[in-house]
Length: 292
Image (cartoon, rainbow, N blue to C red):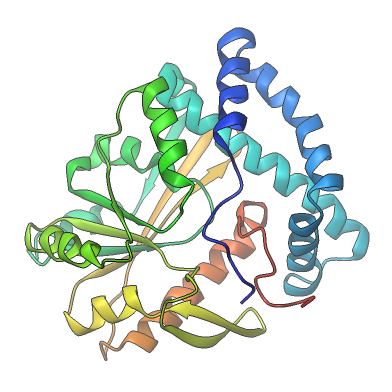
């Protein structure tokens, strides 16, 4: 896997622009602006464009022209998801519809009184988790485990615009204090959410084939679940047409509770989601070392 720097695309300045446009021109005008923003990234975010191009060209087998076209669509979709995140939290939730596929598995998981681990990835819009749990469960029990150094700054700004989110954060820290927070959450029968498709430079990793070539993945979430027999769900929140979001939750029921088997099952599920929603893959760097 290429070197991820611990930060995701998207800045507070960009979010300020989106909030301004939504407040003064409305949601549809914001989408119109995205047509031009996506073109800007297509031509001027060279490394990101290159990595997404290789994803469509090499991993999904698209022709050169189709791959370029889909890079643009990917940027446009990413922008829509960022706008949706702001719009829903700013009082426009009524414009959207939400579909729950397997949400009952979360209740079943919590009945085991062991806590639970939800494994997701940098696809779709898991930032909307609060709005799903508001309806079907208690969002107070959800802890997002994050490594993104930029996340806190963006979150603080969004909180100032939309009000503080009730979904809790556990930030991975050098002093390892996050380990105690995670164990405390599990003891309280809470849920830990990991986007397990990236690793940081100092993390222990597994190397396994994913969509055709070997990639490194963090050992932590998979070992934590396997060693402690913590129930696991694969979860994703994906954008569909006409302001519609689809929540997926699939249980992991292994014959042998092993970290590598869990990783393999996670990647099988992730590959299915990527092929169904190829424009919602947001690892904008050289993920497979395609051009290193």
